[in-house]
Image (cartoon, rainbow, N blue to C red; front, side, top):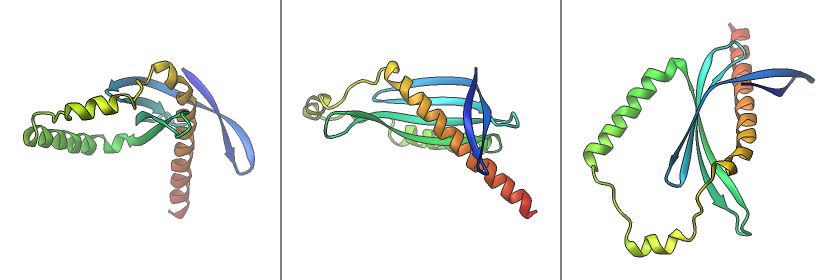
Length: 149
């Protein structure tokens, strides 16, 4: 699926294309994780992992709190090893999940609303814009380091 965005570079506006190669959404309790494989302008692949959680303003309007990791091919092995080691440590140290007390579950269950995938569609456009901005920053850093060499 080809996507178009705007790239403001040196005062001129250029059309650029972004290619989403693969996308996987994983619902996990109150959170949704997005695993998105994208291509850079040079057709190199990278992974973004986004955690999205629905939150509410005091006036009742909702928003999505998001945390994002950009993972590049050269870091896959070290990242995977660190993740596997950390998960294994947790499984060995605390094999049983700790259940919240019953009164806490009842009291706080009213404060949460399940996130529907339809709700997240509007977030996708915002997420893509953020990814494009982050990629542009990375490319500018790359260009700057090549000029220094």
